[in-house]
Length: 137
Image 1 (cartoon, rainbow, N blue to C red):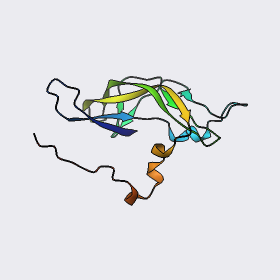
Image 2: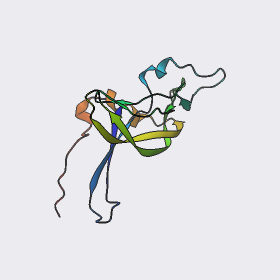
Image 3: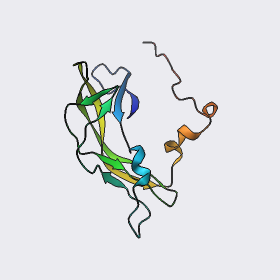
């Protein structure tokens, strides 16, 4: 699981608010999923069976049939085209329960613009992710 965040003012007070949600665009094991014969990309894949989501040592109370973005063998990258956000209830071994917003991939697209998908492999001094700014009213 990863976390995607955005800053928006789409609220009744028109104030800047940071929104975060858990996301899983593709499982680490997707590298082993072969592309169909005659194709160069496998855009959207379904989990073979419904499964529970895991976060912070806890798991979702419900099973989910997930869609993932696939892989390409020709250098293109696949990323979500359409997604939705829904609340998911997690239960922990201690009995604690909490709810988190989770992104569910509905469909994916593959294209040549891959830079934003590979930022993790770039030297950290090149990017200023997490750069914090304070907005004063």
